[in-house]
Length: 377
Ligand code: FES
Ligand SMILES: [Fe+2]
Image 1 (tube, rainbow, N blue to C red):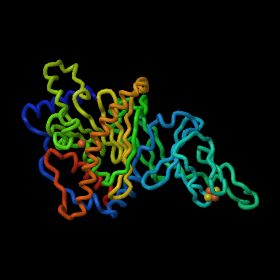
Image 2: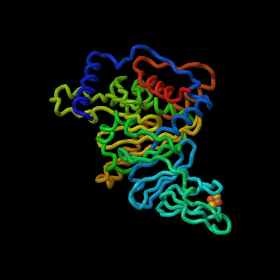
Image 3: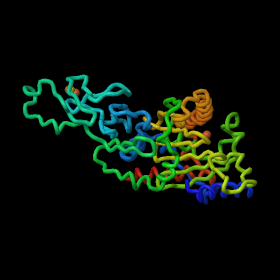
Image 4: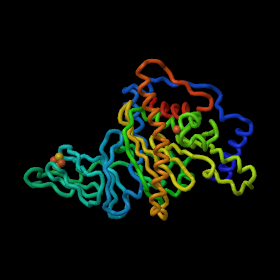
């Protein structure tokens, strides 16, 4: 983060605290509960966003060597990500081109060739079809070059491997990430690795889970037994960075900076910074590590979340420390996830046609506006 930005963000929050105010948008706003319940809307989000915008398939540390692969599901599609002999990452639809069997069953491993479990067509980890049993008699004129695995755009950026789950989209990664790229690079995630992780399916819409991370109105209430006491009451700001967002949630320790020269001010020591890489990746930046929250929307009412603590590779050996940190994060976020399920459940009652966002919850309507822009007909 640029120094000037960092100091500006701290000044802004200190000023709001001293004025006993909040970070306020102009008006309260609303969102229809249909946005969280309707399978029709969910399908539109899947087709127009999840299948066409970058999703993280893996952290780079999950495919460190040539031949490594992982299988993932993105936008309902089974996807194979490989690291080829030149060290390049590649992604493919995990579908055999003969009669459509899913090619790879294992979640991860190291292989230079993949053989289909049905009739043993086999493919290189660069996607080319390399052998077809009984080809001369069964497929005399088959042009193998036309039968490579369907390739997907795949980029290594900010320590993650991003994939576009639809072939031939021609996605412009540079433009899409330009407003957030320098800050994301500054996190040095490529030199980190997963110290701890968990994965769980939650019975709530993916947007509810994102929304829980970008406001601090609930901190002193929902998190009163965990992190609530360490944060200011309802004091956070947000900034749109293109479609992405930076949220800054102020810790109660920040006011001590008033007694220190500004050249010693360090935002991440006195705030939680949350980056939302639109739409499904969030990074929670802590003092000495980063929590990666990857969401995989399954249906309107179900979302699988992968929660991983990323630690500097040089400190991975401090297992007990990372485990403790991961548990604190997990316990805290689970308070949000339980509420997320409560909200989803409550929608069915018909009590609310809309939900209401207060002026200090302005990040939420902003996030929803970005979704609606991407899913507009
Ligand atoms: S479906 Fe894969 S080899 Fe036949
Ligand atoms: Fe929360």
